[in-house]
Length: 184
Image 1 (cartoon, rainbow, N blue to C red):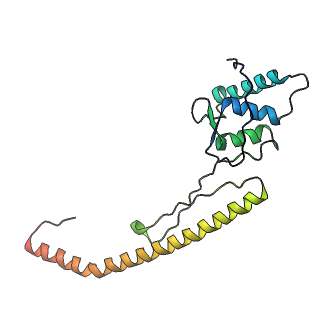
Image 2: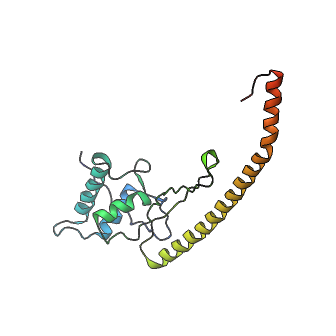
Image 3: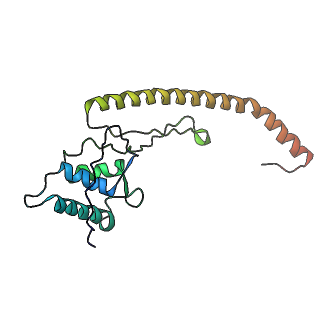
């Protein structure tokens, strides 16, 4: 299916944008056309139509480009596609965070606590990398505190269970002697 031509749209400003922010299809095409050198014989309209066709192909046919809603794209979802298609031209487009799950086991069996850690893909420039690393270090410290809190809660719960075990045993024995059904 041929992509329909459309009017030129202003290039979106990416300063201060997050990976969850969206841009329209026309803004995406405008962004690509503004940064990627056109073919020698292409005028502006031809370049826009060529890029528009490429966007349509990757959305409808190959499925490598996902829309957040019809005609809108999340910056985090298109950043990888842009970097792969035109290396070096779109390093400032915010990337979507990748979720990494790490399981921290505290205790054994059913007394195991699990913690989910969220890791981020580092941005392209040094200043934002340092800020991201600082945020991640703060998250790690907070998670370590949470793990210690969970360990102490687990230890106190296990101690309480051990303290109540003789009473539970006596109660079960008393119920067996009386001929009552066991509640379990």
